Amino acid sequence: MQRFFAMILLFSLCLFVGCTSENRNNSRAYVEGKITGSQSDFNKIKIIIKSDEKNIGETMPTGSGQFNVSGPLLSDSFSLVLNEKIKSFSSSKPGCTISSDSLEILIPSGTTYIIFNDINLK
Image (cartoon, rainbow, N blue to C red; front, side):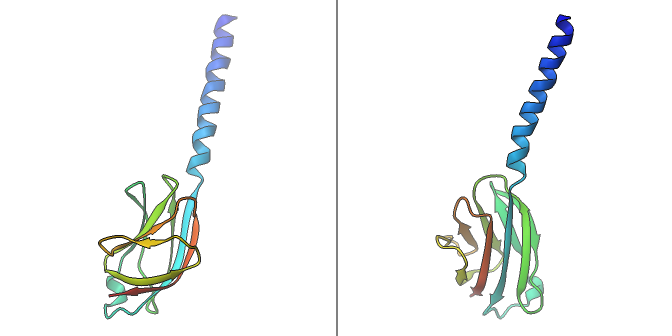
């Protein structure tokens, strides 16, 4: 009888721990936008979403500069990283900033969906 209750307790703990970790894994980052002002070939531009210092999504813009990318969030915040320097941008959410090396747009904590109407590259 004790063995039966121990197994039920163990099973319940596994379910509880599994359910709480699943909720965090369900959050996703969605980014869409357009790149402009670049003399570069759009086929050479990489767009990466980073969360918790890990790449969670990657894409390349279309011939017109449009892009969509998403990935699972590993923390409460994420950033959009490009392989060319960013001159300026406009977005649907306030509080975004360009990193000191100009290769990354830092997106505020709590944001999961954002539109960049214009990312102007140097």
